[in-house]
Image 1 (cartoon, helix red, strand yellow):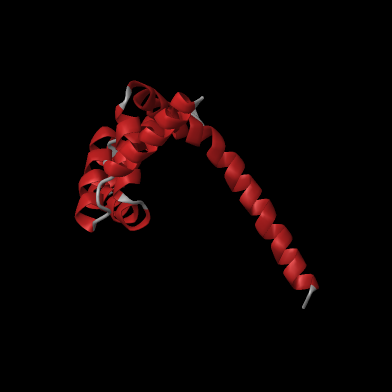
Image 2 (image 1 turned 120 degrees about the vertical axis):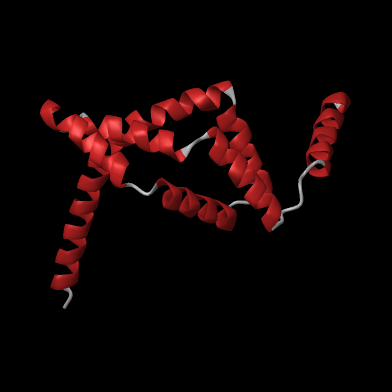
Length: 142
């Protein structure tokens, strides 16, 4: 039992000892590393592919082409990076990059397009219902 407790404590101390300083520079470095292992262009391409399945077959290719042509990937990537640097610590970004750069992480990322494409219509429908109910309640209370 003592060995187990000692091993756990050593692991915690080791993790604390190797934590990188949470500086903006380190956040930027780790956000860049994350974006290298999870390229936004691939995520958008996968999402477009899966979203197109909701359209008639004759419109799918045109939809995918227009979406990827008109989407400013540099702007989107910069927005993603700025938001990551703002909201995550350097260690959190490093952990994300480590995971999504791993075999399991890469496998999971390949499934995100299908996941979001399946979920988005349901989320939109639920949001529409919630907004309608909220508007009715607001109107009733006036």
